[in-house]
Length: 247
Image (cartoon, rainbow, N blue to C red):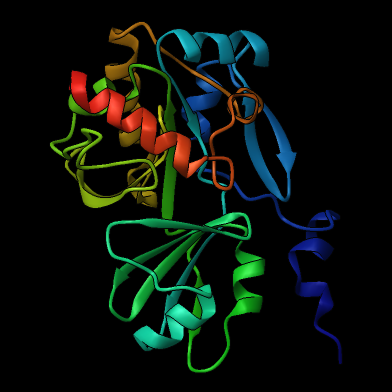
C-alpha cells in the first residue's frame, strides 16, 4: 500500500514545500520582494531595485540574507577530508572549490558553503556528510564600511594583516557563536545559529543603518560579485598590502 497520500505534496497540491529563512519576516517588514528560487523564499530586492541597492552598497555598506545558501558538514579523518578537497584544508582559511567554500573547523570536521551537491559527489567513505543548511542562518555584509559594521558588535580582528581575503574566523559575533569568511576585499559572509536569525539581523541593521547603509536583495548582491569563486587571490593580496599600510 502506498503512503504517498501522506506527503506534503499530496496534501497541499504543491510539488514541494517552500523553505523559508528565519529572517524572512523582518525582511518582508522592511519591504523585501520575495521570490521562490531553488525551493527557497529569497529576498531579491528591497524596493529600490537591484542597481540602486548595489550602488548604495558600493558607497557605504549593504547586507543581504543568504540563509538559503547550501551548507554541508563533513566528518572524517583529516587525510580523507584533504583528499575530498583535492588539497590540504588549512585552519583559518576558506578554500574555493567547485562553487563553494571549504572550511576546516577541526582536524576531523569541515564545513562546505555553496554548491553542496558537488561537495557530496567528491566525498566518499570514510567521510560522512550532513546537510546543515537549516542549522545556520547567514548574512553577507558588503561595501567599504563593512568592516566598520562588524566593529560595532563583535571583537573579531578583521584587519587585513590578520584576516586577509579568504580568511576564516570562528568566534563570537553579536554575542552568538559564529563563523566568518572574508570573501573579497569588502565582502564578508558570516553564519550563526538558525534560531537567532531575527536577533542577528536586527543587530546588523542597527549597526549598518547608523553608517548610512541599507539591506539589499540577492539580485544586488549578485551584481556586486566577490562571492565564492569570484575572488582573485593575487589581486586581493596586493589590495590587502595597501590597506595594511593605512590600518
